[in-house]
Length: 71
Image 1 (cartoon, rainbow, N blue to C red):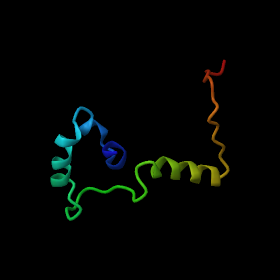
Image 2 (tube, one colour; image 1 turned 120 degrees about the vertical axis):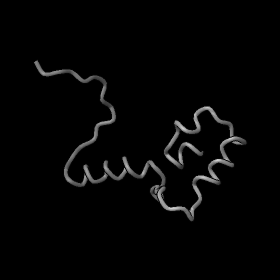
Image 3 (cartoon, helix red, strand yellow; image 1 turned 180 degrees about the vertical axis):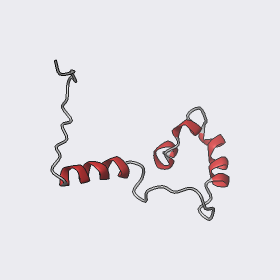
């Protein structure tokens, strides 16, 4: 949950919750300036970009199996 909501998974990759939570409560205080995140979570960024791309006429193919270089 921590990695999904804050977007900085490298910070907490090897921590357990007991170690991570006090640090997050002190460092990511909602009253501090400097840290921003999308209200709907980090997934909102690529999802929003995909939506804008499709609205502009682009097509996203999630069944791609291989990428080859033109001859």
